[in-house]
Structure formats: structure tokens, C-alpha cells
Length: 506
Ligand code: NAD
Image (cartoon, rainbow, N blue to C red; front, top):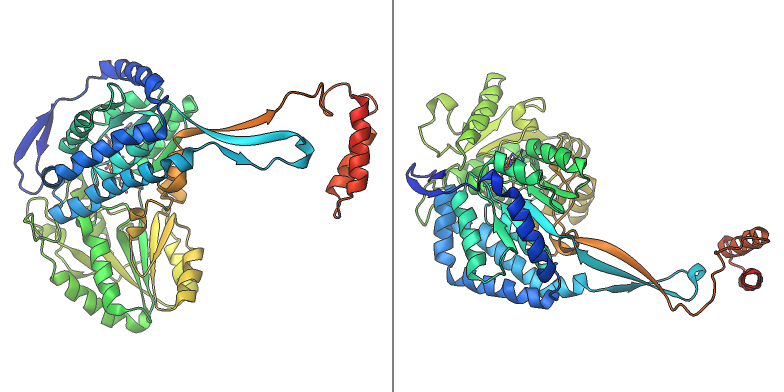
């Protein structure tokens, strides 16, 4: 049994039976059998099921919000806007655009392949294993599931053991929506269950979680050359130039650093502020943070932490920074923290790029602020971590914003806002460097779940082809043919002459 403790209250709120590891083969066999029928449906037929799911989610919105909020400790407003809304929007994306994105497409055929037609087809892969984390337990499981299902695959979801009620809720939603047996299966449990399913030879693995686990999964997948998408951690920089709308930037920083208690892969975890406005900006930022209300009632801004082990990571990073000369601007030193899962919202200054607080993912309400000298320096500082998931640039100078954005080694950059690129399902989402491999969302996010198959079609009426046997006497003619074709100014007369001469040799 997975015992469910509500992090905000410490109360036990449920028990979810773990999936026995002995069931792995049965899950895969069931998924494979279901694939035979599910993959035969058209995209529009599969969309019908997704639309039914959408209706159920809309009807049960309040109950789902409650489950997510209790299971994670996040405030209800965030459960709604950052877990449920992106899921519904994900259904709209696949049901509105899936057919066009997955349609057989005709592409140009080069002249050297005269008489043929070329197409691209998208063929579902089979059984897709989706392993998801606890910070946005609905969105980060559902969005890849929807794309995998919409494109004709069957899915095994292994949700996080830290938020098992949401995993159970997802399972129930698909049952209520009437998906055929075996199309969606949910395996509950921890890393042992995740590892057993990873070893079960899925046709694709879509993993969201830590860099550490991502590397393990990639190694296991490599043994059987199983393709993967890895959505991993981040250490996102926010860059505020002196000409930015400072009040907006301060509000934006407070939100982007502390939403979901900082447990966001794209949280602002490093704030670079131009020197000339540094003191002014810091006081604006502090004012914004002081006004935030922590709690678990309907009007609260910041909820609790979700995963107890995460507290230790935040504590270590803060202790390391303070013992190396960092200054606490807001918050408390760890020895003064109250018991429980609510951490003080913390801002520190006087930090340097060697500190853990700057180099390692915090995944908590911890915001280091650094003064910046100039554009070149801040670009190099922003790029100075192993991560590259998201970043933000704040300035009224559009040219500067775009110039800086294009030099950041990052999966996405947001200008004068933060995090929200993930909310546009039309944009590809994913990381650079150790923040991940591959993309989802957008067209790519649907096509990754398919084999991209090239088809070349000949009408089969000619007896032979010029490049087939016999080669006798053809070599000098081919030389002339290719020279006339590839020379700077194509010589059509010679091309046709040599083409016809080769044809005669067949
Ligand atoms: P985690 O890596 O500990 O766990 C993620 C999932 O992997 C869980 O379901 C877990 O049970 C499973 N798992 C753990 N070990 C496994 C193994 N050996 N084999 C198979 N499965 C295994 O991550 P977490 O603590 O749940 O999530 C936090 C991390 O996720 C952070 O680093 C965060 O930045 C990252 N994250 C990334 C994105 C993104 O889109 N890039 C989004 C959210 C979170």
C-alpha cells in the first residue's frame, strides 16, 4: 500500500494499493493487445474518447482540484490553473490539430527520381511508458498521455508515488470516459515499480523527473535502443535590465520563484538584476513577497512543500550559502524553521557562482539575487550551469530582449514574463544540456509518439530504372549527367541528352 499523507496538514488521507512487479508482463501484453484495435481507429475516432474525457474533467473540476491540492499541498488556485487547465488545453490541442499533424503528407521528389511520388506517414509506436513526477502530477502525466493516445498508442502510466491520489484520479477518469480495456493502464508504486516497467521493453519511454533518474532510464533504454523523451530539471535565470517595468518584474519574480512553493522545473532559481537599479528592485521584490499569504485555504498564494526529502535539499543549499557569506534578505535560517511542510519564502544576496544555491536545482522557495554589470556578462552567467530549461529576460527594449534571448542556451525563453511558455501547446517544450532530451507539445510533441515513415511510390509501369543493372558503359554517362545537373548553372540540354543515353543502355 502507498500511504497518502496530505503534506499541508500531515493527515493521512488515503491508501493506494501498489501494482505488484509480477504484473509487468501482463500490463505489456494487455497494452499490446489493445494496440491492435486502438491503432486502427482514425485520429478523429480517438478524439471522441478524448472529448468524453474532457467533459468528465470539466464536470468534476472542483473534486479534481481538491484531490490535487490535498495530495500535493499546493493551493487550489494553482491546482486549477497549472494542472487542470493545461490538461484541458492539451485535449483541445490534440483533438483540434491532431488529424492535420498526423495526416499523410506529400513532399517534393527531386528530379533525379523522375516519375516517383514521395510521402511521409506517421505510424503509432505501440505501448508507450509514461513516468511522471509529483510537482504537477496531473498536467505532467496527462499531456504526454493525451498525445500518445491521440496518435494511436496505448499507454502505461507510472505516476509518482509521492502523489498517488492523483495517479488514482487519472486512472478513474479514463475508466469513466470509457476508453477500451488495456488502452490506458496505471501502475502505482515507487521507483522499483518504475524500474520494472522501464525494463519491460516498452516501445517508447516518456519520462519527466530528475536528471539523476533520467540518466538511469536512458541507460536502461539504451540496452534495447528504446527511444525516449526526457524532461528533466532546471535552474532558470531571470534577467532584469534597468529599463524594465520594475514593478511588473518584481511581481513576476515573486510569482515565478514561489509558485508551487518553488517546486517547478522552470521556477526562477537565479535572479540577475542590473546594478543601477539593484537596491530599488530588491526593495520592490521584498514588498511583493511580504504580501504573499502561505496556507491551504482558498485565498492562499503559496502552499506547502510536497515531498519531505525536498526540504533537506533546500536546507543544505541555504546553509551552504549562508556559511559562505550569503546574506538573508527575507526568510529564516534553517535552524529557525518551524516543523511541518511550509518553508519560509527565502531571498538571499551576496552569493557567487560556485555556491550550490546557484549551481544545483533547489526545487523550493529559495531565490538568490545577483547584481549584473552588462549584457555580455549576464549572458555568460545565465549559461553557466549544467541546466538549460527556461529563462526570462525583462526589458522594454525589444531588440535587446531578443538579442539576449537568442544567446541563452535554453529550451525556451520568455520575454517580460516567466514560465508560461509551457502553457502554449503550440510551442515545443523541452530542455537544453542536462535539462533533457527531446521535445513535446507542438507538432513535435504529437509526432514523437509515431514512427515517421517515408514512402516513395513508383507507378511500376517502366521495365527498369537507370540506376539498376547493368552498369556497363554507364559510368562516364553518369559523370556527365551529374556534372551538368550539379554545376553552378544547371545545363538542362546536356542533362536531358545524358539521361536519354543512359536510358538506352538499360
Ligand atoms: P524523480 O526522478 O525522483 O521521479 C520521477 C518519477 O520517476 C517518479 O514517478 C519515480 O517513481 C520514478 N522513478 C524514480 N526512480 C526510477 C527508476 N530507477 N526507474 C524508473 N522510474 C523511476 O523526480 P521527482 O522528484 O518526482 O520530480 C522532481 C524533478 O522533476 C525535478 O528535478 C524537476 O525539475 C523535474 N521536472 C521536470 C519537468 C520538465 O518538464 N522538464 C517538469 C516537472 C519536474
